[in-house]
Structure formats: C-alpha cells, structure tokens
Amino acid sequence: MVLTFYHPHWTGLTAYAKRLAEGLVRRGHDVTVLASQHEETLPLEETIAGVRVVRVPIAGRLSRGVVMPGFPKALWRLTREADLVQMHGPLLEAPLVALAGRALRVPTVFTNHGDLVMPSGGFNQFVERGVTAAMTWALGWTAQITTHSRDYAESSEFMRPFLEKVAWIYPPAEIPAPDRAAVERWREELRLSGRPVAGFAGRWVEEKGFDFLLRAIPDVLREMPDAHFVYAGTDAVYERFFERCRPLLEPVREHVTMLGLLTDPQKLANFYALCDAFVLPSRTDCFPSTQLEAILCGTPLVSSDTPGAREVVRVTGMGLHVPRGDPPGLARGIVRVLRDPKAFVAPPERVRAIFDADKSAAEYEALFRELVTRRARAA
Image (cartoon, rainbow, N blue to C red; front, side, top):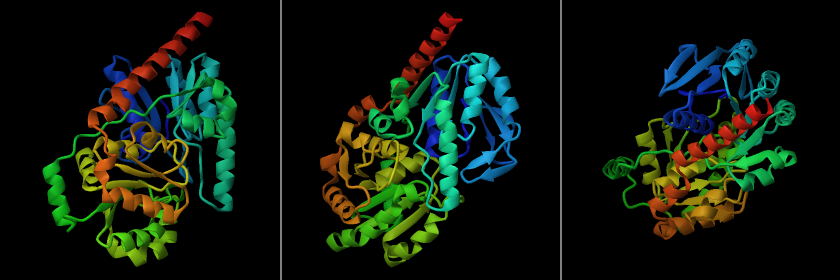
C-alpha cells in the first residue's frame, strides 16, 4: 500500500488504509505500507499490528503533500517484492506508482478517497490542476480503480472517464461502543445535561463547509435557545480557513465548545454518543469516516446532499439530507433531528451489517486475488 501519511498520522484516509491493511493481515496476507516519515522521531521501518511500515524521509512540503527524494528507490524495491500495489489517493506520486507497476508487471489499484479539491487562490488552484492531471494520467495505467460508493464514482469528473474499471467498496468502519456512563459524566462536566447537542468534526478546511454551519447556528438558536454545538478536530496547517471563519464564530462562541483533536478511539466514540445529532455541512466529501463512526455510535446525521457523502443516510435512513451551501436549510435539518433524534436511529445490528470492516476487507481480498490471478494467466 502506498499513501502519503500512515499511522500515527490522523485523517480519515489514514484510518481507512490502516483498518484495511490490518484486516488483510488478519486474513493471512503480508502487507507492507510505504509512506512518508512525517515526523522525524518515527522509525524508518517498524511493524504495527502485523503491518510492515516503511517510511521515506521528507525534504519539504508542497501544500498538503510532501517531497520525498528517496521515494522512487523505495517504491521500486517494494514493488519488486509485491504481488499487487494499492495506492490511496489523492497522491502526488501516483504516476510513479503506476509506472513501477507497469514496468515490473505488478497490478496496481488506485483507491480514490475523493477528488482533489483545493481552496481558492492562484497557487492552490495550480496545485489542484497539476496533481489532478498527474493522477488522471496514472489512472490510465492502473488495473483497477476503487472508491467508496457508486454515487461518488458516477459524480466524479476525475473518475468518470474510467468508469469501466471502477469498483465501489464501502469503507472499513471500526469504533468501540460508547461508554454511556462516561458520556453522562462528560455531559455534566460540559454543563450540557438535558440540552440538545449537535456535533461536528474533521479538519477545519474549506471543503468541510463549517462556515455554512456557523451561519446556521443563529437560526437554530432562535428555534432552540438551549441548543449547543461541540467540535472535535483541529485547524489545518496548510490551509488557514479557520482564521477566515473567526468573524462567523465569535458571535456564537458561547454556544460552541472546542474539544480539540480526539485520537483515542474510546474518547471518540464517547464524543459521538455525547451528540444528539452529527452535522456534516460539506461542500464536497467522498465518504467521510465521521459519518460512519457517528451512526455506529447511535447518533443520527444531518448531512449535505453531496455526492458520496449522502450515501450513508440513503442506505441506513439514519438522518436527513439538506441542500448544499444553504445555511437556513441546514438549520432546519438540525432543529428537526435535535427535536426527535430517536426517530432517525436504526438498530445497530442493521448498521453494522451494512458497514463492517471484515466485509470490506473480504471484498478487497477478492478483488486483489482476481487481479493477481489475471496477471498470472497473462504471463
């Protein structure tokens, strides 16, 4: 597996790759991850939960990506050892991965976690167009493309030219059951007992649409003056969108509690259970893991009607869709769910039957076996 950041880095993409890698190890496969040494204190090679992790030192950063002079050599060496290579995109190095696979006759799979969407600004748009062009070239050389839902595949300008080789597999979702006693204690500590609570989470970047939520909060408060909002996450160092949102945040600051980045799985599960509704106001979003984690903890969603992201509500009924970029519509959806959250909750066994980490790993295993077998027959 090739991706820019691996554990202990914390993003939805990283969590997806880690769960899949460990799921394949549990199914008896040898998995090596090639990623950046995003922190100097991390070892260049180690084993995490049975997964061999090889890291390449970085020489600099380019927006959300990194520059790794040693990457081509490490990629070539590990591709020679592999039966199959899966890259997780967006990935700046995608053309190198595709070329290595082609040259060494090793099938490559591009797993798309979302089309690259950069914030406004000349440099950011230059990066978006350049990296997207490079990845588009790489798609033509890959044996298979995977993404998280048919809805997203058919809506993606990036993948649409290659739909004949696109497969969709739901993400591997894992989160512990909430500790209900700890949740109640947390509510008391935050002085939220008896109050309706809406949560939101993720990197504070433009595509997540948190500015729409901040504009919606006054309308929610007019209908439900005791409502409160809790946020789990952090600002993104490569994008200063949080600073641009400060004028929207300050007027409602007393109604928003910032919890910071939650990396402990149990704490994260308790966060979702703390909320009566989980809000996803994204401009774009392929299939955010926060939605899956929320419904697995019994919390219904208020989700923007965004290709890919709307899949979770569509297949589970756990929540509402609201129009994208519409703060008044978002506020109406939040109020509706907060007033009767139980009306939108599905039985947990039904949710887990749809979104199951072992099921995802099994589907990937079957796909990978088919590609390796096809290569052997062609040899």
